[in-house]
Length: 471
Image 1 (spheres, rainbow, N blue to C red):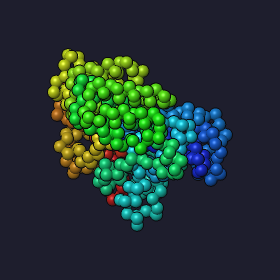
Image 2 (image 1 turned 60 degrees about the vertical axis):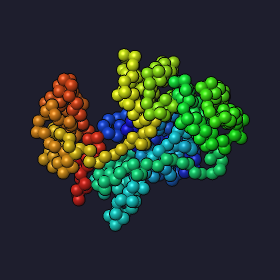
Image 3 (image 1 turned 45 degrees about the vertical axis):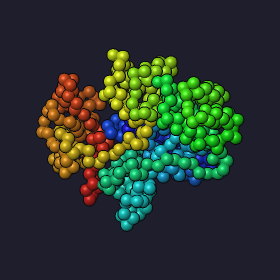
Image 4 (image 1 turned 60 degrees about the horizontal axis):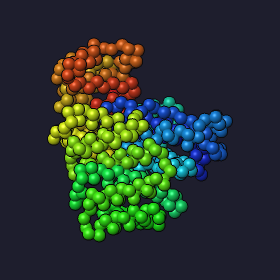
């Protein structure tokens, strides 16, 4: 999975950071296609407004008095923050801080959050003598990026998306080096609060992992070591009676240094008793268990037909997860692989690789700036910020091979932004039709089109010329 979420909020006050507007863009990083619909959401913060905040964003209590509360909208946007990297400008100190405060306020489980901060990137890469400051508006001006309305959460999220892409291209940034795990630091009280949701998630996934271990009716030494290491990591939470019982069960199991299948079932029952006492979203709980089962199944680097069938059966038993990532993707993959009731070595490797990408989105988020190298690329349409020959030259410099017409050997058909306007009305160019015809015959031509200022072909393709215009 290559999922990123561009995120920005406006809040009613600086004390509680109660959110009154949020903007979300979630997309597949490699294909540039939307992962979920763009969201521009106004919220009733259920809190007072500071005058200084109103002066910044212009949102008043009367404007949002009939809008939903954060707690009402969260079930609809939670998926934008799971298995993703959140990207924003000062996103840790402002936007994610506000998000976590609002989750805390309504006693909602806090997802595990990873982020990239474009403010940090700008301070590291943009020459200080070139800009007056590192505000979002200043940087967008420097890179010729339009902001429709500054301090509008949705418009700022859109502008920040363009800013990230411009900086990655201009300074050849490897984004992997800048992905961080979000760790809220406020007060001891807050740390004690956040331990609850984090612990619940860890225990739910642990249940799934142990269940995944036992599917093949054997517990390997590697799996036993995992249980031991989990015990050592979470034994600090034995102040909770329920958690203490889990640790006690593990200690009993590990007395002889061996974990049997029967003992793994005992451990699952103990963990399940704790989970039955927890009040949390059924979808969140089931997804955590699913992630655990998948992790337990592939810990040995492969997946058998028995394990695949067990996983598919679990998915059928929890069919209400349909529509929630990663249910549909895993189900489709297993249905196809098990159509003949066997799992070949190639299918096992593919399923294992796919599950790893689901479980470890950050590890799979590889931004290869020169991935057009060796690709056959055909251009069509009019490009908003450069002539077609200029775009072709740009791609050639980066190792791309330019096709004058669409061929069977073409890898990518790159469509200019102006042409995309016609597509929205059902009008397709001849090259696009030709590519679609070839794809119907078994070819794999990627048709890449964007209506905004930049285009990405598995990566960002943005002009880094001195005048900072971008294709």
